[in-house]
Image 1 (cartoon, one colour):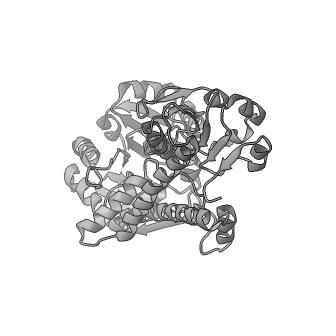
Image 2 (cartoon, one colour):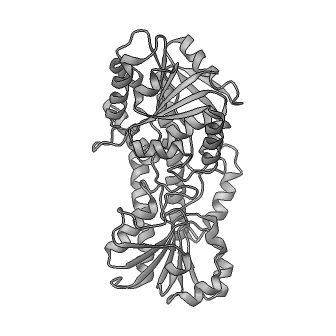
Image 3 (cartoon, helix red, strand yellow):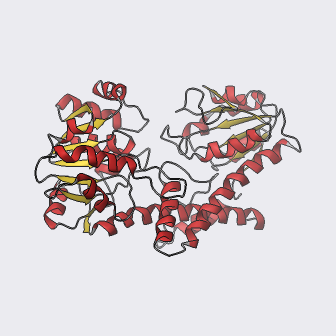
Length: 425
């Protein structure tokens, strides 16, 4: 077992630290936010992520995880140093490495000899060399170990991954990092740093491409009269295609896909390659936001001014409280911008959110639907399927449901005289 410093306690850092502690390592997690550190010391988890609170609580009770303020307070005692800091998208689509560079510069002088620094953040190709430069330590090796965590299933994804990818120029460093995963049953792939970094971007870009493709197919289904559910079912039986990421929706978003697709396109551009496919993937997604919003506006009639829209779902997907690049927010901004009054409910969002000043957030789906002319479903929370639809019919002024996730039982709604407009159906 090793001592691991985790720099950054965001979504990736906290999951990484907690899961390494679960595997038996001694983990020291660092952050720059003193309030957050105090909350974590008390076992308070600042994000919605299934199972993370339990894993952190168990690690705290076992003395396998600590939370400290400041990166150096963690790194001066560790053998491995995982950089899990933000790499936000810049104005030109490239990844902003300022947080990564600052973290490396901060811990460099205090690292124990022969330490291994690991890039866990999603970073452009060549970033291991950037980190090495800012560390300024010839005795320290830098390794890439990209994360493949899905929000909502991050703990499961870490402990039972499809693969562990390690990119290293030094074989000994690669072996040392691989040993950290000795209790994880998954293929461990060792490659060079640039290939490891490209694997991460390529994986997310491919998944985003599948989502844009199926949303385009859904639009085609609407034009030709096909049912996208049957079309994707038939596609998914083909093992070359697979069943995952074939569900149409209002568009895709989240903290990773939009910025990673844009960053990969920018990387290609920087090296003289016009990655037109990725630009079209982004364009199709943008069009899907507008297409979903237009379904709502069309249902409201020629003038949306003063009409009421009930929205179920605000987060970019179910199982998380993450609003970053949420398709729901993209759609509702367009609807409220056209003059409609929007009242929303999401089980993970208890109060008003700055991103949507024109949207009222309430604590019950039926309250959101009261006197609504149109209901739109934008996040695939399972509980929406079990709302009392008799009460829904009593509450709403209108009888139109825009099911942006094809989630609800159409037969149940039609028996209550609702018109149901889905995606690709």
